[in-house]
Image 1 (cartoon, helix red, strand yellow):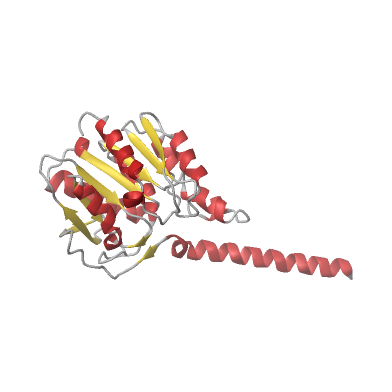
Image 2 (cartoon, rainbow, N blue to C red):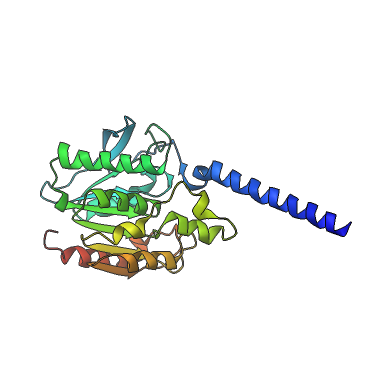
Length: 271
């Protein structure tokens, strides 16, 4: 009798576990992407609205803020939540330093059409890259590719195909699978994940200058994963340890953040 109860209990537990795995596999994109359709105005920044079309025909919206034509462009890949209008502080920071800057909304974010997927986000980034290099005739060596959080995975995917002049990665991960293992150690994340963003594999082969920025207080993307990404990267590379939680912006709080970026870019002759 006890044996039958134990077998039944084990069967129920197994069925529940399998059910959870199936649910996570089916709904995982809802755990990764948090788009918002509400785009807020940026009257102090005055961005130009740019229409993009991805290689699979999805219509996207981007913001471009031009400075001097001779200055480099920063192509900004934002995080997994909100839309481009929630990253005005970052865009303003770059613009105030004299850089041209462009940020784009992934499919399903802001006014961009479609539904976000890993492959789709790579296509969206490539559309923004094509706009800069073709429509604005910006040389790839004059583009600073900046990726924040999930945007770091997008930026690494783009840089693997189109080497930029420099790559800056803020609060991002070695791979999204590694983040999943950290969040759900009791799940076979490696088997379930369709969204993978294998950034560590990509930076290992990148020869462009790279700056990695991460905080030990980051509660969303562990500092250890940021360090693992840095360790996996091919030289030339630099690491700056910032402070604060994942959502904290170091822009106004931390003078060392800007100094680290300035020093990194000054060391590259073309910037």
